[in-house]
Length: 638
Image (cartoon, rainbow, N blue to C red; front, side, top):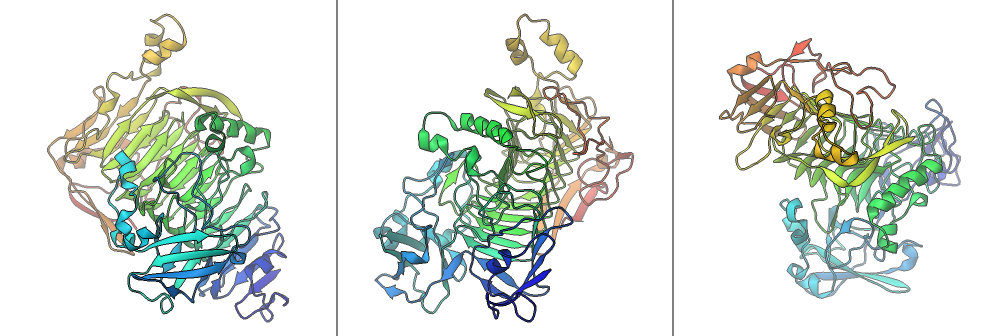
């Protein structure tokens, strides 16, 4: 059946094209498996809460914007009748009835792994003609915004330039009483009764209240202004939009922006743990995260009931924590062709869960063809990165591009372009890095105080635990480009590592004991056929490689809005740089998990196409493009 929603309709109507509903929620209360909800042009200020689930891939419930019509779902309300105070400051007195049982100006940004300023921040927001303000802690700071505490001092190594310095003078403060919430804001000379001012009211825009609402498609909307909470892996993880611990959602062709914390959530819910480290204070978050994995498994967390989502062709920007977040609920999903930017650069708060995409336990997740830039951290995968493939993504202008943490593989990182000054933080093992272009600092670290789980291949069943010893990585056919003043570009940080499993085993068993032996011997690494330019340094035992220490390729990403290009120069030797096409048969199995590099269905993987999906020859050029040549290369990358 097909239901229609229009701003000219009525919820007392029949939901037909001729007699449409007024709200999307009315349609969501009656649409069942196989139905389609078509929403017509307009701004819908509501939190859509699907009531019924689809039953299979072929019996979905589809919510879509009418073709050629602009449909906006907002978690905000348009507020008028502001009263002047002084010094460009205005106030609006609002009945708490407007907020119901969720007042974002009372709700705090709160939870595990949050590191914020001394002042408490809240989930509310004020927008002037679409521009979000910054919260201050007192009325006095409205007059003098420079008095507010800066989060910059807490960022230490994470600091990146403030992207919106002009916004820092647009500030707000809330006084929440039992009956009224009074909002004060410095509009810097603008008249809020003549301009367009909105405030956060709802937590989400499209998110079921119940779990298990499977097989939903959401397509073609603009969604914005949700008062989403901080979403660590040890808590309920609601987003502006998300499936809420369900299976088989498709979120596609949407424009999503201005989520206070996270935009799209494919994460866990509260019954497996909800900020216990912060609330109880008796155990570290690491321990509670371990418990959440086991609790989820006992509750039926598996491929048959959770995950397998598709997130594609969305534009996501201006969010405080993540564009896409998820723990446990992200398994077996595919995330591709999304444009993600301006994530966590407003810097009102900060914590250890911030990135364009931040996933824990991305078992058999495929992340490909995404464009991620101007983020505090581009892509951060953490815990149980197993069967994961990160392929053909473009990273630029991030503080860090890619961070892999405390996992044991197998994980394939192939044909990516990483160009930020801080390109790769590898705090994992069991990776295969093939045909990438890496033009920034690389960090490699062990973690010998946190064991994390690994699984039976292509399953959520836990097979064991391990520390992150470092190594057990494969680097083939990559191009590394150094930059002046940057250390650690290349593979030289694997100095003294063994180069085969046989060598590793022989060395270990020259010692006496058990656990301590394995901590003393460096795991094998498999490194060959890489090129190193402009100061990038190779692994000392790499047999076949090319080093042009003084050659600067003058790499740049040229952003022209709707189109973008990569510019790179290569020396004469580029004509002779070849590497084999890699596959399951050429990538040695990972040691700890005892698993092969393969597709989620268990079939052999073959890395035979480049960044542009062009086929590779049996022996092809290095890096993410099969067409690179000596001299200047100018390649369209979006």
